[in-house]
Length: 110
Image (cartoon, rainbow, N blue to C red; front, side):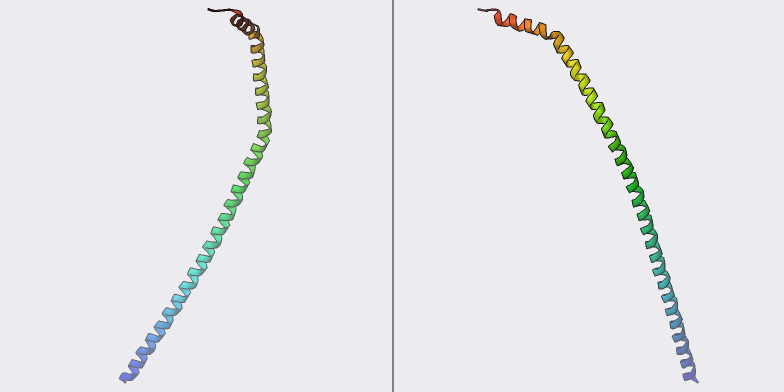
């Protein structure tokens, strides 16, 4: 009888071991499924973020491209205005400068 109880105990241990193995396998499967789901969600978020950043970049490029033409025109206008101002200033004092140069060139010092 003792061998029967030992056999029954061994059978119980084997059954418990098999049940534990099933539980472990189920946990591994659930873990792998969750990891796959998390990976898919992360890839989706990365793709959305990348698309958002690309759209933002394209918007900024479009803004600066449009503005660059305006900036060039504005800078050309400012440059022309400064050139005209300098020309008017030099024309107003050019006679004085010529007179000063003639005075210094024609005067003799010992």
